[in-house]
Length: 333
Image 1: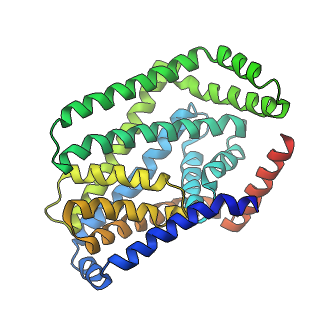
Image 2: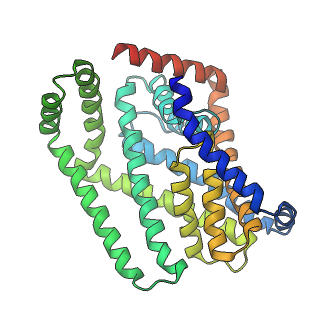
């Protein structure tokens, strides 16, 4: 019953968006736009989609302080995205930490999980910056430079706050223990998690490591931006690079909304909605969204599939292991 309550809101959101797509989109026009697309550009964006995942693995390995091998991190990254595409509750994030802890030779699950949270937090910052900076240009608003400056200041403030938290982690832990004294189970679990989280947050206090992390993260988002622009260009020859930024930001937020596995409906609706605002062509906009989804399945399916096969695993077996692991963690609390 608890699991139903968890996935039902996301399922309803996905179903509502899918219903809207089915109502408004002319699928014959969408098929015609797919047939007329520039497949040379689509081939180039396919290569970029794999390159994006390859660099994303380097981002995560940097957060892990290069302790696991790059091969293990790459395959586990692919496995995590593959799990997110097909399993509920965004188990791919938990699955990444769980699977890598069995390969890394010494790194514990509690050490690995915080690095994923940090990665996702910085992803949110990048997506907000890209979306908000592109919005004034695509909407024809004045003052876009001012908005860019404001967003930049907010990002700096956020990073400074995390840096201060990392430098004063003992004070934060003591405060948590003081406030949670009335709830022993929360204090035990939360204290253990926070210790590991602050250890992962320590990347901010290591100047060279943090710069490396930011470099790879920036490169990864730049690749994504170019890939989305090229996909859009294959369907809309008049597309501009700022369109790619607007669509990428919308896709990132759409993927974060509660939904069915793989952000079905929300991801597609976000991209199609953003492109419809730009072009007024709902059918071709959906073709772009479905192409982007296909690439997500393709890169994670190939790299994640290789990882699962090399370990003798299947999606169903990983799902059972993750649910058993999650239930065990709850009992230990």
